[in-house]
Amino acid sequence: MSMGAYDDDEHERRERKNGTVDTDFSDDRNVYRGSIEYDSGDSTEALLDQFKRMQGE
Image 1 (cartoon, rainbow, N blue to C red):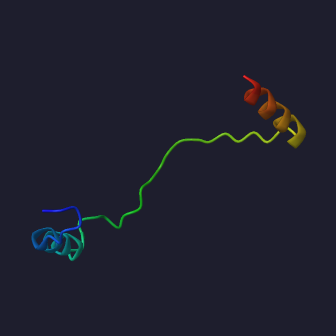
Image 2 (spheres, rainbow, N blue to C red; image 1 turned 180 degrees about the vertical axis):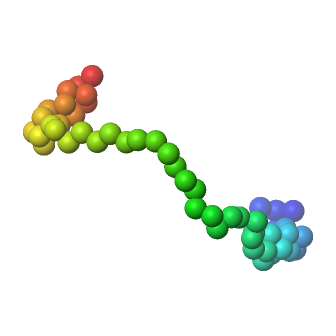
């Protein structure tokens, strides 16, 4: 079989695979517990300076 040859079996396999819908998922929402810290204390200039220092490393 050459590189561009049409393969009927492969085509049918892909059609069967793509023709089915997976409904085994749960519609329940996940509950996440924990905390997030967000520090926006630095100015834009300080953050740009830090970025430039990191790129120099």
